[in-house]
Image (cartoon, rainbow, N blue to C red):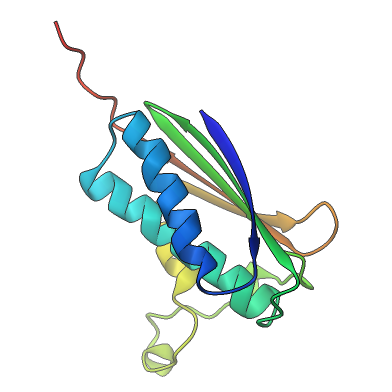
Length: 141
């Protein structure tokens, strides 16, 4: 299964992105912790696109592509911002960063997904591609 959303760059759009992912995961009977970790990574990616990519400009769109199979999830989030270098993002676990309000989103994405890759989007901006293996549902006999 697959789906694509184009969302306004508003924090309310995160709920739309989450609902779509929950519906797709429900179709392949994935829930519980696996759904929670995927939702958390999605939430962080979309929030980063809105906050850092678009700087809250609602007229810019966030595109979210989902590919869901019983054993695999792929999510791509694309913004229209200026892009960034993820290698220069400080580690939020370092003592000097513990109380900073930003910097945890990428850490969470990498923690909760099996693979996270950042690229320049096709029209500029940032494209974050996240993949996670899913536990196949047991077959009923």
